[in-house]
Image (cartoon, rainbow over all chains, first blue to last red; front, side):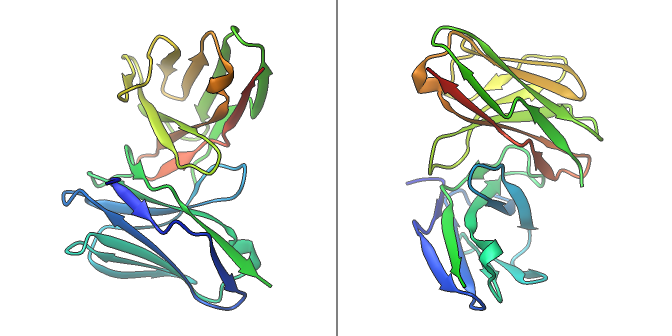
Length: 112
Length: 114
């Protein structure tokens, strides 16, 4: 079992729809959780981070964390073609992003 | 946000030669930097943690003599791929956490070994 698992994808949604990206992790001691967006041929960029159970909203993005289920998700509302990218889930044992373990990523395509 | 710059962005070299990739934190000091390798359609694989003023910490399975890491200052870490082979062709990315702990990535360096 991988330490961090994501939907294999690819995921395709129409413009304006909600995109739901899921991630599970194996280490119950994990403390911090990150979602990165990576465009093809580019480096990852941080979208959101979450430390506590529940929802965290930032604009069109909502991260959801359930430590009991070892599950973290990212919802993208009103999806735009510019959201088309690979989304990486990363998990860290500490409070900072430092030495995170990355999932394989889910590729999202938003169709106009 | 903080900026991490990586150079070169693309490099093509012949098999057997060595290639150096630089990673600089432009507006903050980074005592720690991370080096990753990413193959097509795969996630980032942490290769090593670069520590300013001390030896790098390598992940299991990463040859420290092949991937030389030097972190000579608080703003610069270098990765040298020695005696490169075609299987070393990959996208190499560095990252550094700023003072808040947020991780910032360099632009990445695409290495092609002929």
